[in-house]
Length: 185
Length: 271
Image (cartoon, rainbow over all chains, first blue to last red; front, side, top):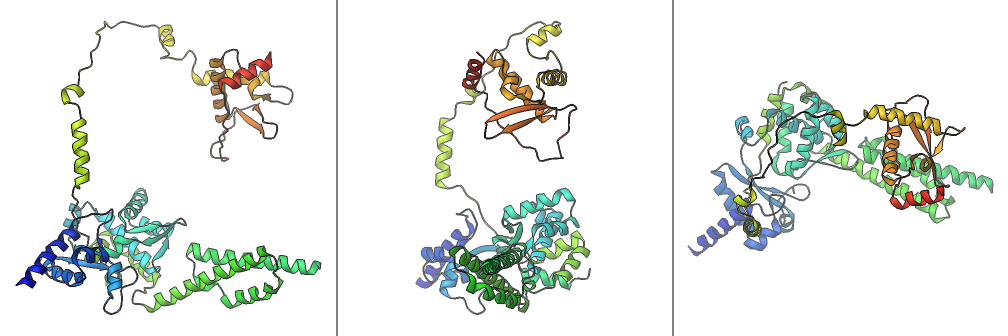
């Protein structure tokens, strides 16, 4: 009973930390969670994740480098960033409520999948050319800046585009490419 | 001796070309396998015994450094090809081009799991808001009605409008043309005049006005400035016909100080 109450308290605290944004970027680093919840925070997060499943939400772990093949070490978890995201897919109607037009989403899908296919780096000019195929010319630049501002894409001084933190947190990149390749055009 | 110098020169050029090639691969995301690493290593090794000066050795080190970056890119490329993420870019590009916007968006939504977060006001922001609210004047004081004077409507004359500076005496373009003609008359045999000799006037406000008009003469292609950096002299050269500079050449701005002190110095020099 005592143990149950202990975890119930920790789960509540974990939910508060994860849901409320406290930094410029959403998400919490593993070491922050360890400091607030104790060294057994991975277990607390696992229980919270089970609770969130009923609400179609999940705790997403984004590792600093590539996702480890086996069980992540405590050090890897400490450096990782944790987010609460939607577990399943969302409907086009819901995206409208989030302020995204169908054009914006198609543009984002195009940019991200093209950059993935180019090993995570592509010249902005090439991506813009591809977007012009889908969007009116005057919207291309605006949309591209929006994707960069929101953290989906990053641009360096040589006008090369990369996938940024939000893409890594929100998009199942492998699923996206598989869906695109598997669909009948 | 001279052949050694020549070999060094040739080697330096070779290394510079290697650096440029590697840089272009790194910066422009070109295929890293276009660089033949073995070939470059042979070149670097061939010239290495020639280098003696720190500058030459630095160039050699820079070439090796950029070559190492290209090898790293090649290794990443092989690694990527062997992962499940590898997709033929041409195939994917074709798919993207052929799919409709709606279908692309629908597919994306299946792989998109947006972050859920709540934004809340922090105690610090709350304290700031309270401070602002307390220092805010009551609305009755902020929206004080502005008093106004009622006057009867009536007719005005052009002279009155000129006096009030609502209407200019001459149209600006007309004034500019007159000013251009004056410049053409004042230039010497070389077709130019010292800047201060042209803009300088009896009063400081008139000098400012002439400098202002001169800037438009230059911008609109009625004249050009000739700057002699070493002598610190500026000349104005009028054109016979106005030239449109826009779009033909990159325009540059030349700041010219027309301070009161400068004007006084010019006046004194005039005697």
